[in-house]
Length: 410
Image (cartoon, rainbow, N blue to C red):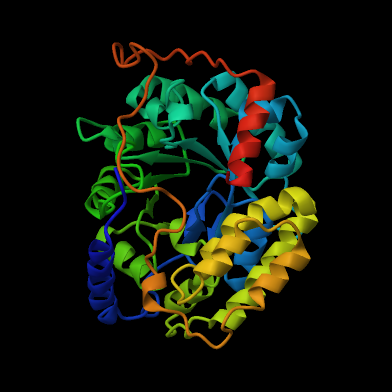
C-alpha cells in the first residue's frame, strides 16, 4: 500500500496546526522528571532508538540541542557477544555521553542476560529491551514484536535482563500487538511490572500497522491505568506541542520521539523550552539547517570514516531538506554524495534565507507508508504459553551484514 496522499497530508497538517495553537506551555510543577532507577531525566523526553539513525553522532547532536535520554540504535545480542567490530562500534558511547543508554535485541534469555552483564560492566547507565520491532526480517524468526504474543517468553527475557543488571534500570519497548486481532500491550505491561522493569514504552500502533495512520494515544492512557510502573508514550510526536498534548491526554511519564526529529535535531531544544514553560524559538531557516547538516556530517565521518559515513549522510541530506521549495535537485545530488567536500558544495547551493515551512513538520522522512501482514514462523501462534526461545538461523556473519545494512540506511 502507498503512503498518505497529498490531500491527506495537508489535512493532517491543518488539524495539527489547529490543535497546537491552543496548547499552553507547561505550568510550573505540571510535569516531573522521568525516574528510571536512580536516573532522573528532565525534561521527560526520550530519543527513540532507531536502526541506522541513533548511533553516537546523531545522539550527540540531539543532546547539544536539549536534554533528556538518548538511546542507541538496536544492537543484536549475537553480534555483540561475538565481538564483531561494527556491532561493538554501534553499541559504543563516549566519555561525554551521560547517561549512556543502549537498546538491545535478542530472543534467547541466555544471550540477553550475558549482553546485559557485559554492558553493565562497561558502565552503561540504562538498557532498553526491544520487543517492538515490526520488520519482517525480525518477526519471521519470532523476534521483536512477535515476542509479546508469548508472555511467558517475554517474562523469561526480562527476568534474565533484570537479573544481570545490578542497579542499572531495564526498560522494555513494545507495540499494541501484532494486529487488531491480537492486542498484547496490557499483558506486556503486566509482565514488565512483575519482572522488575523500570518502565515500559508503548508505540501506540500494531506491528501490522507499521508507521501508518494515527497512533492510538488512548492505548497509552489505558496502559498507564493498568500498571504501577512508568509508561513512556511513543507515536506521532512531531512537534513540542504534541509532547505536551500526549502527556496531558494519557498521563504517561515521558514521551519518546522518533520520526519527528529526523532532519530536525533542534526539536529537542523546542521540547526543553515548552517543558520549562517557555515559548519555543522560531525553527531555523535553510541556511542554519545547512550548517547543522554539515556539523552532523562531520560527526558521522569522525565516527564511521568518510566512505561509510557519507553513505549514511545520503539519507540525512534528504531529511534535512525535505519540505523546502526547489530542493528536489539538491536531494537528488545528496543521494549520491561521496565525500564531505561534495556534501558541503551541494548545501551551498540552497536558498539560505528560506524559512522553515509548516509542511515540513509532519512530512514522512523515514518509514514507508502502508500496512503489512506480520510474518511469523510457521505455527508460532499455536501455543502462546510456550516460553522456549525461537531458533535463530542467523550466522554471526549474517547478523553483522544485517546491522551494516540497517546502519547505512540502504
